[in-house]
Every structure is written in structure tokens, then in C-alpha cells.
Image (cartoon, rainbow, N blue to C red; front, side, top):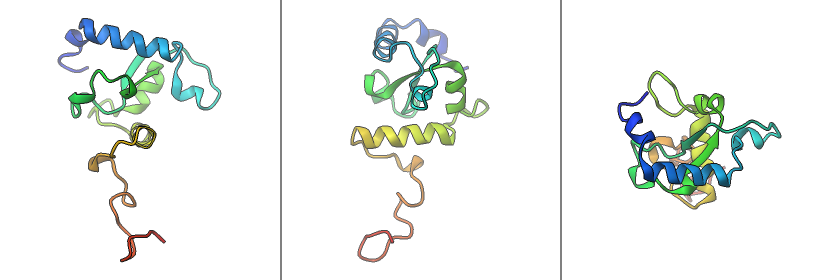
Length: 122
């Protein structure tokens, strides 16, 4: 657990935006719903990690309702870094909301590796 998680969970602003995200998602895990698996949501996940992107901390587009199981698949619980599944969600969110993918989360293709001199990927 994070050092400030107790304060964060008692923060009225967070409580309000968390409730908004859960209501929007009908209290269901949105990630498993993509595959037709209904699972109740217990957690609201920051797609752009709040430690690295505090400017998106309370943005509804940056929040997704997940079950605890799915949420644990989004983070490496030892380092708290995003897993490949979490990074994939971040990249999909960037495409959906026309946000630039942070360089830390770009794959080789997105960083420009393998581009031809005219800029097109072959």
C-alpha cells in the first residue's frame, strides 16, 4: 500500500469523483466487460498513475472501475509500476482521448524505431 492511501481514501474530493466513476461504469469491472465477463467493481483505478501524473488525479476520463483481481493485474505489486496490461490500458486511453503517450510507456514502434527515412513504417 502507498504511504498516503489512508488519507487519500478519506479525501472528500476523491470520494466524490470515485463515486462518479463507479456510477458511470454501473459498478461493473469495465476491463472484463470488454470480454463479456460481468464482474462487480470494487476499485477505481488511475489509468495514468497519480504519482507520475498528478494533473490527471481527479479527471473522470483517467479513472476506470475494476474488480480487485483486475486491478492487481494492472500493477506489479512489488514495484507498483504498471504491468503490460496496465500500459495497454493507458495506450488505449491515450488513443481514445487524443492524449500523447508518455515516452516511458511507448513501445519501440511508437518511439520511431524502424521508420523509413520518409517517416512511414513498413
